[in-house]
Image (cartoon, rainbow, N blue to C red; front, side):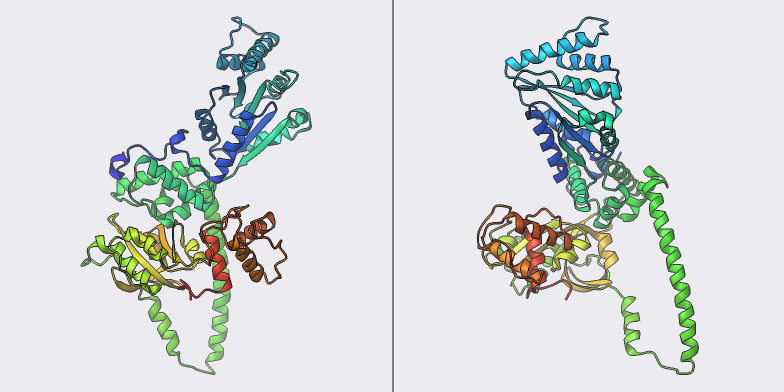
Length: 530
């Protein structure tokens, strides 16, 4: 229903495991690497686990799309089978003939063994991939283990990959499963997506479906992460209903309110929504208690102050007035909205003292790079922006779904100083979050010798600079090896720093990590929070 409304070529949030829509997070990339490892090793088991809806089956489909020509795959999707049924299914998958109405385990195993020996002699490998492995009975699991005994003098003939839910790990940890567990050569568990990954996941699926505009606002994405708990299947279900809700309302954007309503419709009042309510009730009770204490304190102070009357100060009146008179974030009607990006860039450049002499905004980053300044373009939330602490250009969306740009110059508590269409305004932070798509661009000045992100094993004076600055930040002498190589010791220090700054602890010193280091050592650059 909503496909034409948003201009999609196909539905972006179908729950079928279509590899084209597969978002390769770092976790899924590692999971796929483990499966490839299992496909290319000789013998043993590879185990992949994850909660329901985290993308295990989609990862396996991606593997199946990339199977080398010299590999045979037997894919068991429904393992609620008896021992004989499992062996028959393996034979069917590998096109191994067997007698009609065969019920002999030995006949099946002999046929499989003969096939494996023949394929091995031709340089071909055979992999058994079992999805939903938690449904295997102990007897069937034991037969699967025995299949790994099929071997030559040099190597195992069958590699087995098992994919299952977390309870499958619990099954394998039991004493009676120790023989099988000891044969597992690689294990990986897929966890929920982070908030950053949720934003990237949603944008990826929208892009594949043909979206050409921002649809989910930043505040909605943040709420989506908490409501879905980072589980892709729940993300798909909630987003699908939210798009339908926006279509019914005639809207082209999804804000926090629309998303919460969609989640309530598909998840009900139980689960995550119920927990959210419980948290709110507890918070409400705490507020009531605090309010009671404050009221009693106020009454007591008031009775005392009746003996010592004072007049209200001008500062109090100013604060009251200021808190009630924020400006609108709406685009000025007299300005062509097509000029919004250029005007926002002009305001951002002004913060840096750089004259804006560019005909096309797409050339802005090339222009400032010649002045020793770099651009960082990213999707995030207000927490990300506060962490980086630089003035930025924000992509906003008006009530009609039109995109426009504004420069955020400074954050002052509950409001921010924005330049919208050349006008400087004090705008409530909540209103900004409700209009912000999450996309932003900021400027930063890298240190000397910077040429890009630093990865483990890289070397050069910029690596030594990072080590020295982290030592200063940590208030200690640089005891790391005095080489200019990005070695493991320094990688670990970088990861610890990234964790304290709320960054992804990947050990890669990229733009965000550099900016946070510069923030810590004291920077003369324009800052968002003075």
